[in-house]
Image (cartoon, rainbow, N blue to C red; front, top):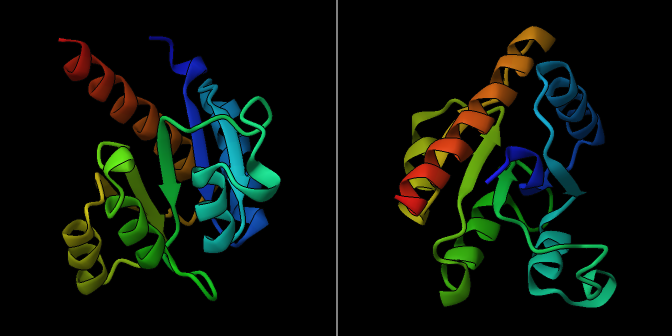
Length: 147
């Protein structure tokens, strides 16, 4: 499976972080089909294919999720718990991508079923490397799933 055909739902309340990740992917030569929502309510609607996200040609179901934890109203922990509470989403890979490096957040995210936990880097060059890390995560996952 080509990485460029991987649909990623990026859930982050900061549009600047979403834009920077998109630019970092381009600079890294990593081309995902990125779709972004800016809060937990929209993430749940997107995943459920409801409301504004009902058209799956415009809003395809993701093969991978990048999830920020620190969002207003419905936070990332709540979204992750919602995802893992549904049988149809239990195997959907979720990468927590957040600014928090607190051990309690890492443990809580893993306890809720996060596939992995990455801390948002400060510099753009580090974000480019993180985009490559996401690509490698997906490639390794695809290889073990197909093996």
